[in-house]
Length: 131
Figure 1 (spheres, rainbow, N blue to C red):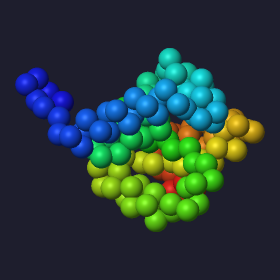
Figure 2 (cartoon, rainbow, N blue to C red):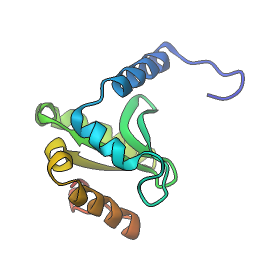
Figure 3 (cartoon, rainbow, N blue to C red):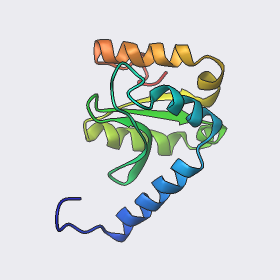
């Protein structure tokens, strides 16, 4: 929001939602944030639970135009919604990488390696656009 700008009710709702999500992160999100915060990933600045348009991204790096989403079991029931959301984020110029919570909790190095591959090659590490 620029100087003198105002937020719509929808924007305010997303801001409140993002704030709430930051306060109530899942164990996988806490583990990922511990690795990303303070430029912990190769010097890139990531933000957590950040509003992008109508969406709230789990982790976001503006410099890389990268959104990282961590998905729990509920996302299996929301695949169509997630696909539409990812398509909108791609139209906005972002790459979306999705990882299961279990991958982050059991082997975070695999997740980081997939993100590194994306950064090195400028493309998703998996043909479907997710890991």
